[in-house]
Length: 318
Image (cartoon, rainbow, N blue to C red; front, side, top):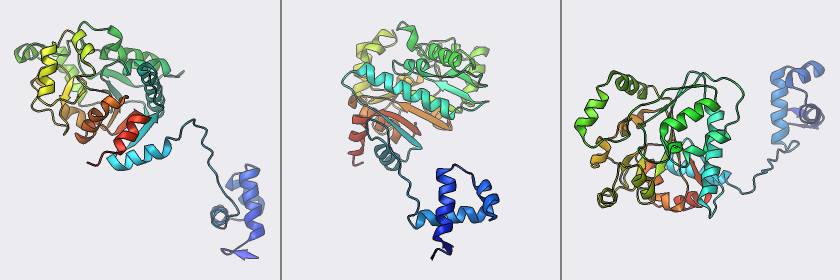
């Protein structure tokens, strides 16, 4: 009895050797005295005829794979990683940090420069990195420090901790993240060390960025010492729905109208767009519009998000 030009006996024999006895195609070829290309075609025929059926058992607690695919297709993203939602913000941040650590371990290559922004979610990443080899990778902050707030959410500190975990290198930006006026910024960036650091922004291969919602982040912004409540209200009135590395954007992903952006010492929005691989990390349904704005502005290519927020994003019609 023959199917697809091969006897059923031959297809079954090849399939058993390959799938049950773990023999490779070269070994099967030598044993049966058939070319490797023929073995490959026989195995394909066995699958087409239903002799071989491959079932993928998903061990994950919740099914996120289809949700990730739908988001990737809807928003034209390179990859989406969805984590479980929780009514405890700290748990979501930890899960996002764990997923980001696993993703970075998968994609980082020697010789790359990885840029880091700041925030309470990004500071979770280093603790989940599992690495025992030296990596020829350099971590850098994408903007200066964050003033008076907790040091562990500063971009310098997160970059330093990631460099330690990856056994890589780190370069620090010794400057505030925001200055009072443009003249003071010009003074800072005229420094030769700062100028040298600015040149690194054009060489970033991977950008790891938290996505903030100004009103939700108001306490952290106030603690930084760079913003007042009047500033935050002004940003809201001007239409700010998100910030990426202290750079504000509106619902359409545009940031030209926000004067605060001009005073940031760090990479600018156009610089972020030029980074080959940008990873946006955010959880909480309250950040949905911020995430959508970051996608619309083409600031992220990979999204790491929680399940409830991901499902809500799919309901968007625009």
